[in-house]
Length: 265
Image (cartoon, rainbow, N blue to C red; front, side, top):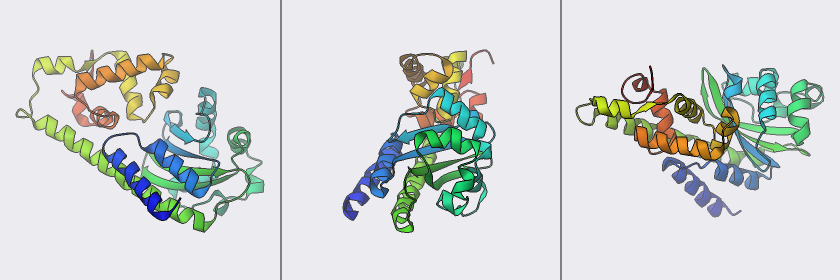
């Protein structure tokens, strides 16, 4: 792709993210094509509860429940994951941190990576908190990434990072504006209308962790269509206009009050 075309595509993806759409699949596809990786992934990793980590991939089939479980079990033993999570300026390539021959003998490589052909990894951190991190990873089976290849990729990830931050700020602003509307007081009827069933509370908690409808369905043992209906119901009950805004409502202190409360609390 020519430079101008790449810039326009990145702008389109970032605008979509800021507008509240899921731009991650397009961003991963763009990165995979630009760099020439076998596949790309976006990982929202919980360091406290690894089983709640979410992985979105482009170029290979989604992780199965069994693969999720193995990743959750072995993630704490992955040396590059630990490095990316803790280093102030993480190295961009797995081979900058570990010896591949030694790494190939580890369980995390043999169970989680070798079956997919993922031998070389380049990771770019999108966000880091005390409890977790989000990162974009590019994967190859036959050759390592070069600095020249990773330089434009890092710029794209930086743009994506800023777009996600702006979307989160806009969602917080929307929630704050809603909270103060009408003198900041919700009527008893409004509060009751926003109370959630136990199943809806489970769904919104997983939405807040970034799970897709398919992932939520696998986790809860229900159909994706049922999950979609629950999400639509949640939008109607809370007034949220996007999954991100719904997540902000759920994770904010306001949910302990009138904004969004599981029924029976």
